Image 1 (cartoon, helix red, strand yellow):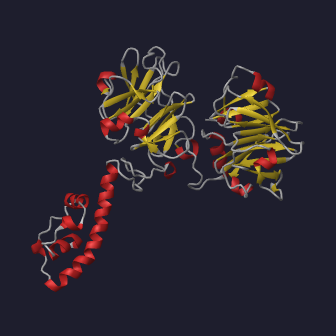
Image 2: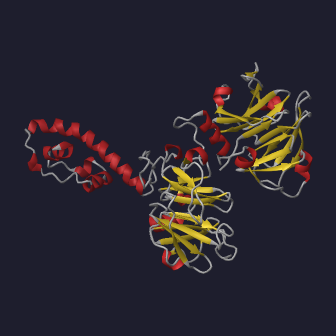
Image 3: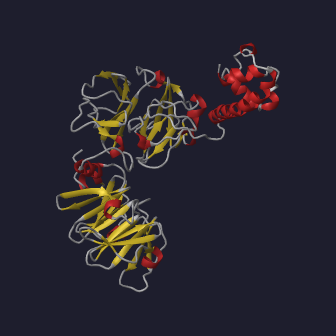
Length: 495
């Protein structure tokens, strides 16, 4: 009969309103806990009081759980609920961990090139960081659909359609929402059939395909096995068959490439033919997420991950002989000529563990900056941690952290430090060392890392880098030089 029937049968005259809060009573009633009849149990009168007291504690505990769940759903105090990776809702109180191999509902890249990954009523902005509720950025999605989930999303790229160019479109059931700079456009949401005639409801994925990738500015829609190419200008729909690609649960265009997400894997595909070239599928967490440890990998797989990851670098440096050390999250990649090596930071620099803010090379040593401390290692096999370190950053370089980048050019003793949109110089031969010669660096909003080597100064921002002949040119130049791809051009990634 269970706890509920036993309790009610034990004392049918108990006034629940005085024992439990109204909210708890209501959640018990909704759950069906008052269904059993008092006639179901016949206990002796002298046993009832003891039994009721014992079961009342259990009842209150269960009701409290129901009550928390209900209040959480309506915007109350957040509970901590861990749902299985394939669960589709992920509501307010859920703990959504991108490194658990979840299947994303949709992906859209904003006007600044930052991918938004959607799962349930949460979204992740960029390749690392915690999940946040979608309604914090796109409130109207909650107003109209109570934060179920986003079916599909894309950012419009069409100079022939300026009223929609750079707008983000979200598809929920049979509705489409258009946002510009996170603000819902007037007249939205609309029926999908009104905005995109010939495109079905309840989509799986969508991605923009501008000229010249496609013959005309196009949006590619995915639903089950069906592929639709929608011409933005003519509104003509061509149905396609992508035989070489699995069904997409999400799709997005990034750095000129097209990616189909399926489960927690992805494939890079040709937007016209659907052909998939190369070794796919690949793991999303290896290339688009900052996840430290999952699964077993060979040495070659670790190297490929670090060479080809789209997650931004934390720090990079180049020695006088041209060797490069690049750091990202818990891992590092070293490049010596045409030889690559990758491992965890902890394995080679155990005192650091992970998460390097900046690093520079000077006289055969690596100066590694983490938070407000400096670690120094003598380069070698293995690297040797110098006694007496770490030391305070203020003591070693005369500046407070956190720092974005630091670099020294060959045969020089000046370390150039980038902090926000300001660059400082520190003379490493001076005692005490002082950060001076302060100058603005306004051409970039945020620098992830930088290094100086035989080709000059390399500034790394996200998945791209920019080269200057010298620190002076970098500061004086008003123009931003040609953009290069970190994975492909700096590390030789072949995809």
